[in-house]
Image (cartoon, rainbow, N blue to C red; front, side, top):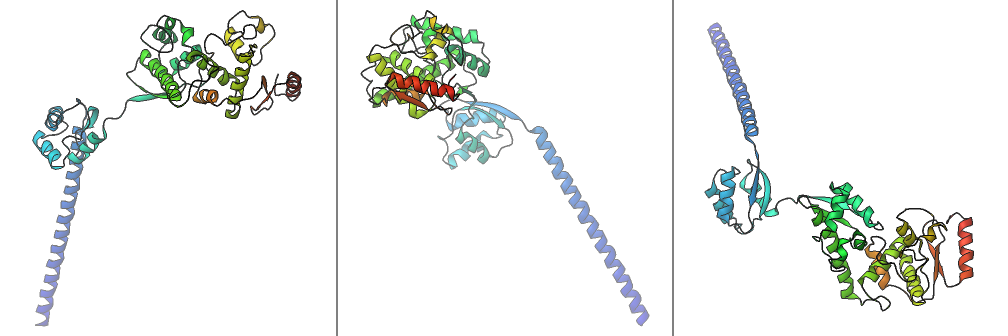
Length: 356
């Protein structure tokens, strides 16, 4: 009796074991097939993924946007997307523009992009202060790909307009000196040379008009050309912000006394040479920009200038300084009204290696 029971028990255990193994095998096989199917689906989705360029016109209604997205293949159901927009109260909130959209986005992902708007297709250019117009066009050429001659032609073509020079004056490249505001700009990739130059011209006009909405033009300055010319001289002569208003005061005091301005940067502009030292022979150049020979201001600015140089004119203090010179290797200047003191300071700066 016991033997029979043991044999039956053994048979039962064997059958149970086989059943467990069979069930485990089926589970593993099913899981593998499921994973394989999922991977195949993912691969299929990736193979069908497209990036589609879509343009949505300004003022498009929800139905129009849905039709555009449906016809281009971004969505598979115009009606479903339109209903989604209505349910979410988004029918008038999507932004126009040109988008590059994947065709596998959920409605939520798609509307998030359309609410944000298309990415701006721009690039950055930077024009530093203190450049001559020729140098400004060279740095623009290097950053935009336009030839310098193309930019010169664009600037003098009549297509770029400034309210600070007449159309006739605009035909001369030199008359544009100082009228392109140095700054960092975001430029549309579709912008041509005229567009880029107009942005810079308009920026100067905006900055100048903003100052005149706050301040009156100083009484010792008659017009915008004089203002821009003085700003360019300040830009060329001073390195530290604290010295800029004082340089402006020296220019003002010399103009009021009908003294020669004697500014080296203007002589270098006349020569169109960048040098660390102006020599006696350089001072012989016959040019209205040689303000060692001719009283008054140069006929135009001598470079581009920034907002700090413009602000310095309005901050010009009352004093009797008529001399200045660099007296510190860090750019600090000293100002005086005494010629003997000026010569002593000059000799001392030379001994210390501050000035050549």
